[in-house]
Image (cartoon, rainbow, N blue to C red; front, top):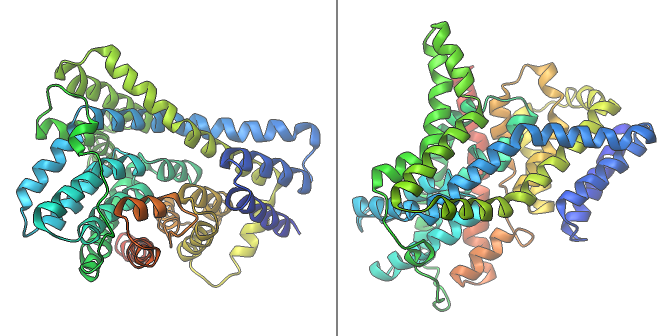
Length: 439
């Protein structure tokens, strides 16, 4: 009975977000309260239970998401993202122009939220398309596949960060495994798949701001400084995760555990970027802080949505429905990674939001970790892959792609929706391949 109640509550959550257009944060809180009532939690302690879950979730990921957002904002406003893009494109030239766009999308996509990266890089795609007289969709899909994969697989993006927190995964290993899986995924779903899209033509040209116009005027950082600053969180998380595996020095291990704590790495990264991309570029500290204020405002709702998911998770734990779920799921003859992917994919198709789909799935699957001995890092990536499945008309990114590239609905499905579905399917395939190698 408890599983039926939970299923009904999740269905109600989907209805609130997809059809009633209720803000996802409010929808999560309403659903958590209703689930608690129907699952028999004492009404006098129900709100405290939701608050506890919300607080624990926000306590574990808020600093990381906020710091990551600030780094991404400064990467754009300082011109570092533009420097990275132009340098990579200069290396690859016309012959390998799509490879250059794909690499640029991946590098820039790690510190930037998807929508920011999209708006930043689309003018570059249009500029290259005009220069080489090539289809915008043909050129754009490799870059946008990279952005999408980074959004779904790689910390410090909100969904992988929240999933890692819920499923008790090691963020550094999630990042390392995610990059390993991401590379062949974007090569196939981006570079190879785009070969089928050469004949998709835009109906007319849009007046899109040039990438140069959306960054502050002033001194620009060098390519090496831009790359170092934007990717320092990646370097830091990777290094502090790998060093303890190859060294038994107790002092080094303790240093890695302390400095490698994700919020600490992100704070160090933020301080470095504040100097390298801000003060060193002759910008005042006030100007840099203004950028950070804008970035924090932009990410506030995402942080609250993640917190709302934490409230629902706590209701499930306190009510004991998680134990019932475990008993049921362990009887299903399907691999837990595939089950996680399927659940996330179904919710994604219904809701449209990759982040919401991942959070809902992770909350349900958490108990499996206590009984099956799964690798939580690969489970995070399985859910992340599923959450990217089949972007269609209920996903804002679908419409961003259609309107910016000014193509028909049919061509949007043929290009964008198929690309996202390929990313999802290839992601879970490479999760299983990686699992067979490391376990």
